[in-house]
Length: 505
Image 1 (cartoon, rainbow, N blue to C red):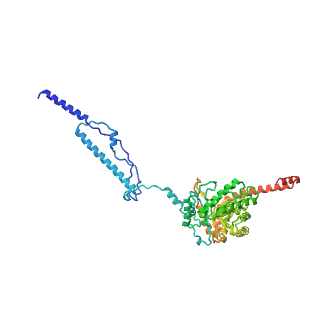
Image 2: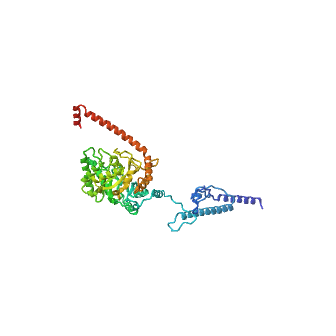
Image 3: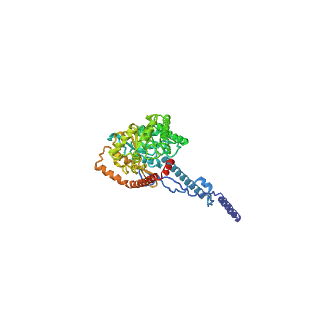
């Protein structure tokens, strides 16, 4: 062949090879995709965590192919075709694996739409319900509630309980300490304006009372606000007190409660008879605005301007109330003792109760607050102590729980309760123990070694508090004695000065 023709063939081969290179397609290199997935855990297997993070294979997707491309020349069309087929096969396999894993995850975590149960080898992750767990812990009783019918006397002993987050919660809290009666605040006792009673809370309260056999008309004793003074003279302040008082009474009737305990108030340095008349007038007004609730006056400890410390004060208030069926008395053992009504020995207890019966009338006694006293007799100090640890002592409460006239009345503990170090959580265990202690005194002989030993144990616990309050009382008595002596000496001095002082007073 001619030499020229060979040169032409080589030129054509080079042109064909160049065209082949220009026609080479591009393939993509994709980044690693990290996928969070769950590993199936067999039922009952607690040795492995429910889920953990694992690394999947490198996945190439079509979108990634379009975004990141690197041109790589291949040497022949056959290699191009082979690599393309391999890439498509790998991509298809990885996409199928991913879809399969997602399908398993849906089956394990969703049941609703198909109505089918999840496979046995896959356990869905359960959400923690800490609120439900906390509620279950709250209602676990510290002490079982006693059946009153099996006690030797029908004493309904209970506790003031919390009504936080709804009045219906007070019932769970009463069950928590084994109470057969209880008290609560129907709204904040330290605010004038409060949200209205929620219908859901009202309905649950009524339902729970029926379920747990609490007679709301007899054995539930709400406590009134500390702010209210129905003997207030100032018109604006008096109206504010009355409005808050009436609101509580209306809540009682919404809840089916018939007893409402409150502090009588104070004279405001005005004449006592006038203050008592104002108080009675407010009660008459409130009784006309409601229909069933009984307003229960609490016996108080203090002297001076405080109303309700003496049996005579309580008698005078009742005398001015038009509807006598709508008024009653709650004796607080700490308050009455501190003011001067002794309950410690059987003889002193009988004398005190005889005095109440003759002055006020036993028909008006509707409830009791059971509290020992850190302050001594006649101190007129309101300082509650745990049962048996104060100046009243265990023998006084033996007298109380064995007095027949107190049967069927709500007997509510208001003794101190422990707290956590941060003060956020109260320890109600003391109340639960005190309820059982008081129930155990019913029918018990106080001369037994068992009683005497327990009496001394409790006195030892409260010795430091009693000593502290006794010292304060002694100092106050000394000051009062010196002041009285100076006044007497002044009155025995210059007659003209004495007459002037008398005029000034």
